Length: 345
Image 1 (tube, rainbow, N blue to C red):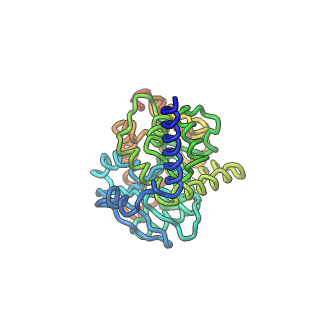
Image 2 (image 1 turned 90 degrees about the horizontal axis):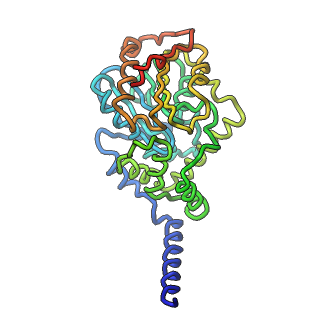
Image 3 (image 1 turned 180 degrees about the vertical axis):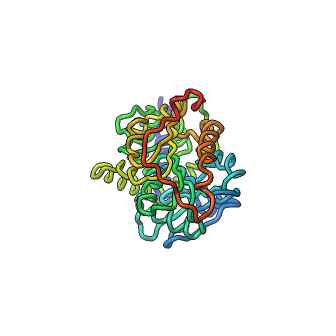
């Protein structure tokens, strides 16, 4: 028993030492190493208003901008970009506070700031007219960008669309809850790769097994010095907006065609598909519903997701063409592409 007690004491000391080391920053990602691993060609960095923005631009044809969601970065669109770049010029960038972009010398991490940086970036890249495709909190950035800088987005497509505050009561995997409590109380500035793997599993169908490099990249990006703190600032600013204003009203400013790829296995988004469609009071919305897809459809089934997205983009390709073309306006609403069972095969 004495030997067992000594082993326990040693293990506790090792655990305490590990926690102290992590709190001191031992687990932080080295930025140079992360850039070397995750930002190879054709990656580039474009500085906008003092903020270095990580950008990947590839392919040929009409321009399509892909906006990622929270906790991930531009790599969320890797599989979709690979399938679209043969027909379109694909622009992806990590909007602060995510990925390798930033930090922002102004210390401002909000949806309006992200929209302003997007405007500066697209201007710097020389793109005036383009499709905007977005997911999760990237959808909020896209909608705010369109409201603040109208006339540039020619069509818009969304998958995850938080027009109301995301669910605060959804059931969370007990292992993830335990890890969240551990990190919140002991190691707030660091997350293990297993944490991100569980986040992915908790928001996607059981049939989906994320590739190991996805969780590895999430670990490296989110463990950059100060990254989690900057993200907490962004989430807090967003939560305040949802509590004090009608965030979803921004959809009323959209006057170009909209595709809504609604993934109903996901439980993060509060409002339903029909409620989302009704928010777009000044345009036509094509709705496709996927009961088998969750919060990361572009990883879960990139062939299906990209097929339907590309069909929408192809139908509106004239609007995406020349930089001088005007975006068409659709005063009606509520077209439902998903009513055809074949639309969501």
